[in-house]
Image (cartoon, rainbow, N blue to C red):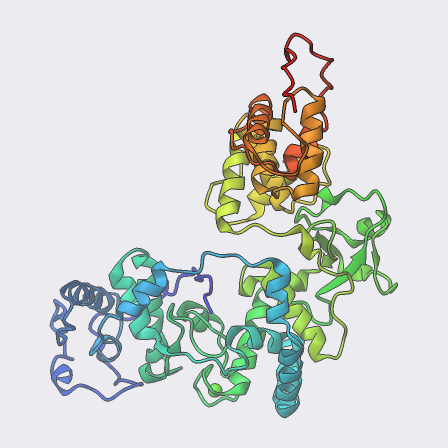
Length: 524
Ligand code: CA
């Protein structure tokens, strides 16, 4: 449920005179002690709050409330939102322990676009079809896409929203790491109540303050939430029309174009330059001339204008042409896989098929620690990743692509564990040796047959591994260490399949009368 925090100003037009009297709270009962203070003298009388038990929170709240009043916010509303709040330590914990692991794209899509969720969505759309159709008619946004966002954000509204936005946002503002951002959200909440869009008691949210079934942050709510049924409230918590229209209005504001597709799965011709999957929008006609075709055989939608090529799992996986409407979905949550999941759900809700190309699950994917290591390696090798943070973004993808091009690899920008091993070894100046360390460390111990083969190979090369008996004795271990030394590897004495492969490459020793003086044979 974690969402990017939308950064737009809700402060800009305060527009309230400092002496303007409060028109009465819209979301909660007025406080009698406060009512007495509502004919303000020239210096603004501070609001007094009961202690939360946390002096730092209390200090922030008193200071923030004073600034909100000075900015013209209504006294009773400020009190109704901030009075009685206590900081929630669970939210600080959640904020500081955000999930670090990254699932491969196919795992993410498998979970987000399950058959069960598609079935669930079809039922919910059928039950609310009239509302969906009315919203689609007004905003021109496909309701299947709206339902896809609804599905991922809050599982069609079924997900629990156990927090309240005022408490969550006040907690994070007081904590202070991103105080400015969360204070701006707090001011948006105040404005929401002042305008009568929602009451302080209704603002159920995620721990990060994302509200209601579409998970809007307060500034987005102020700008883009919609009162579709015309009752004066923008009820994104329980009113289906307001919920769907708010999502539609968001997509519309982010560039959704009526009656255009979101993406097409495509087939790339042999010899295609995968480096063109670089996030750059090119005319669809240009893609056509490069030999790109839809997997269905349908013509590319030239009239849509531009598209970018997306290889979510590199050149061995599905290839997609993304149209501008994909970008509108991506604005909702800046992640390609999020937008792909929404688009695939939308297809499923319409009874259309998913992707045809299978995911290349065997190539693996990097977790966050590995991504960080890749960034360090690429940066050290002169392929800057725009920071070393463990997040695989556009800059890191560009660096991967540049590295792949320099090494004459398919330049799809997709990072695999194999690529990481190569970059790491090279960045440590180990080249072949570094790769060998990696390969040796990961390779398996030999079984007796392999050991016999290894012992024979050692003996042919003059490494004196003793009898080829398939058992690991001191002579065999010594031979392994000698080969490891020769290869510049740490000496482990582990007879692995990697060691066998290297032993088979050893030159054969000439018959060595000098190095192996004939021993006296034991007489029987
Ligand atoms: Ca409404």
